[in-house]
Amino acid sequence: MAFFTNHYVLSFIKFAILATFGEILALSIKNKKLTIPHSVGYRMLIWGLLGVWIAFMMGVFADAMGMKLAKASSTIMKSTFMFAFLTSLVMNFTFGPVFMVLHKHTDTYLDLKYNSKGEKITLKKVCDNVDYYAYAKNVLIGTIPTFWIPAHTITFLLPGEFRVVFAALLSICLGVILSFKS
Image: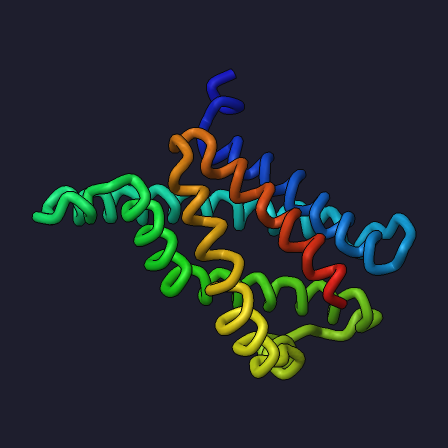
């Protein structure tokens, strides 16, 4: 029973279900009909593993920022809001880009594998099919500063036990927002 109460197992389950649901919802809105993405089982597995990584890194950044701000001489720097904002800012400008490019690679791999009819998919082929300009424009310049930093500021204002599920719910929100944009 302890297995199902483990923080990382629960993070895996939350992201596998909620983030995959977000993809289904975004595709369904975009296509104006219920649309299940191909390779949905693999997508759930990937989202689950990413969820474990997110849970771990959220803890690392929150703990590190807490220790850093505890040494601050300014009371403003010790405020809950500054903790949340700075944790979000540092996490999203360091971990965020790496996480998002890895996720783009996993999605691209699944798309290529689905469309390849048995052809071997190499890292070079995946990289050749990722539009890094669009990634830089839409993710680094677009969603990180305008969506993820404010959203994760709210995330880090929440008690620790609610942060991971809120982060998983945010993926649904972004999926819906982007589906309307496209």
